[in-house]
Length: 317
Ligand SMILES: Nc1nc2c(c(=O)[nH]1)N[C@H]1C(S)=C(S)[C@@H](COP(=O)(O)O)O[C@H]1N2
Ligand SMILES: [Mo]
Image 1 (cartoon, rainbow, N blue to C red):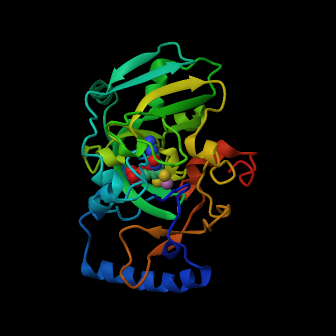
Image 2 (cartoon, rainbow, N blue to C red):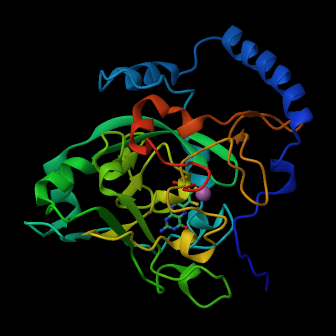
């Protein structure tokens, strides 16, 4: 049995810088080809999503196909291969589902998932998603601001962090049954309260207008678009306000490789690979891998850099 300890991008996914630069020219000419071929069916969606909140958030790139979004996943509770979450989640039951919100709040509450959606509604948010393994997608999520939920439970003044917990169901999640993998269950994550309250931070309950597929974190998962994908904890059962930094699965397992903040930053390399560029899932061909330069805070710096004023991003990575 193979023991997978960390996300390991295939060597083909990590491109030396000189190749990356020459490939950019090929990507540019390929992109011209797409434009010449006509308007993509999703460009209208992209334009619309860019206008939805009217806050001038960065214009997103072309959305990744639903097929790629639902067949190339990281969800280790179902297995460590990218195809495992789609292939092995057939037994997963995501309704009925309860989400417990508690800790340092005045009004703790347990919500039924459909009650949660009815109360907080569904917005469209087209966001970039950058995995720490140096690949990326552009995903049209449906969901609501986490801040709206947190305001509803009234955080106490001592609350400084938000802790998130994923479901534990070994009988429905083959990756949780035995094996030698070194993540422990439940998968956990955390945010500082001000990060959690930021209007870009959402709880997503759907993708492309359809109910969240199991492999993407049904029925509800976190999306923090300026952080590496592993912060986006899936299949959440509990949200707890605390006064101390909560444990986060990857950070606990290998703190030198996966920081608590995990802000996307092309200048801070992973100890084992560069973070300067990323593979664009769904683009490229048999002959070349489509890549683009990685942006600080994944392109959302204007919206979020204020959260980290005075912090050393090399140290608090
Ligand atoms: N519970 C749980 N949440 C998780 C993961 C996981 O293994 N378990 N993987 C994370 C990682 S590494 C990434 S990149 C994203 C992937 O989300 P997607 O498959 O919907 O694109 O989910 C994150 N959330
Ligand atoms: Mo990831």
